[in-house]
Length: 127
Figure 1 (cartoon, rainbow, N blue to C red):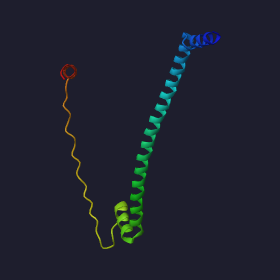
Figure 2 (cartoon, rainbow, N blue to C red):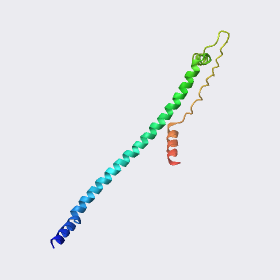
Figure 3 (cartoon, rainbow, N blue to C red):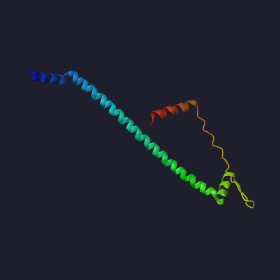
Figure 4 (cartoon, one colour):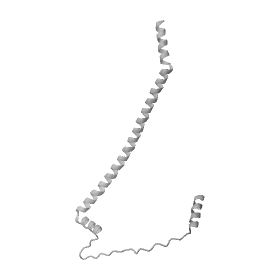
């Protein structure tokens, strides 16, 4: 009989509202922590992707710079760079610079203040 009463007491304790509330609180806490870990994992993956993209860009830049260095180590590459940067020419060469003539911008149409207001109102009304 005593054993039966102890089982009844244990069941009563386990199935009581207090234990159900405590279990619910623990469940909410665990779900919250799981969600926080999920968010951190997602952010870490995004950061990893950004870092990998940056690494690829830097590798490409390194290759371009290595090519440029190898070009500049040769006399032909040095001459090309000097010509492009400083507009240099050899002693017997003549350099010709072609400069486009700038054309003046067409004058803006003058509209009255009221016409410009009506244009703005019509642009808001019409899609």
